[in-house]
Image (cartoon, rainbow, N blue to C red; front, side, top):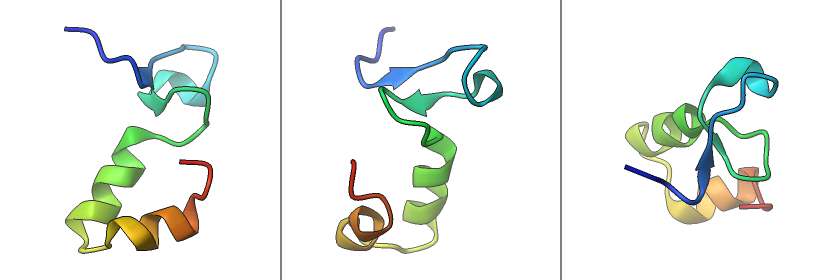
Length: 49
């Protein structure tokens, strides 16, 4: 399975899955969603998304 917007690079963020072109771990966004944050709140924290 291939995800175009998620990258895994051993030289970036210790190899954890990140949003392509950004140093934002996917797990961070998932934690925010699981914690009840809205899309607008997440975008306020990470406007580059």
